[in-house]
Image (cartoon, rainbow, N blue to C red; front, side, top):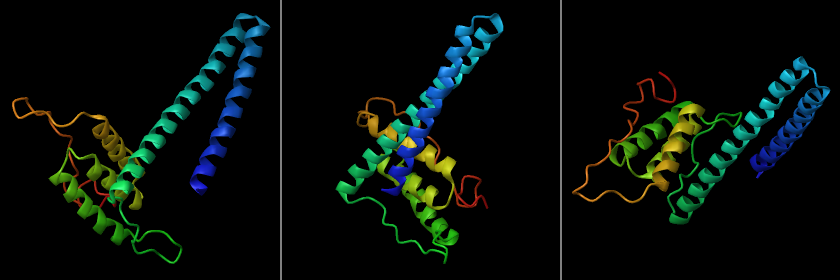
Length: 174
């Protein structure tokens, strides 16, 4: 719940900032000189990019939460029973062990969005956010995709699954 509140507060602050910057851009355009109009248009581009970025991230979070709810309803949501340090952070060795298990599951079923979702959680537990996001994007894409093709149809190539915990794609980067 705390994450949702933080997200909404951050989004509200960003929207306020976009409105403030946008109003300044409009003021520059209204001034009417070639230089201020040019700067005003340039300033208006920033809120447009920001709104697009906020929208894309909000869509990503909504889709990931929908997958989590569906997986929870199926009873397949990963249980958070990892060992933690005294400060409350997940122990790196415990996260790497779970990552290895999740990687193997994903290698065995590369077209199952559920395995990619659990792999994304394992990456996040190992504090590898970029790879967690990519794995979650893959889970979302697979969830949207229609069921597997008939045997007569050629199968599409699957994306690569991380090969080993020692490879560069391992969460610890070892």
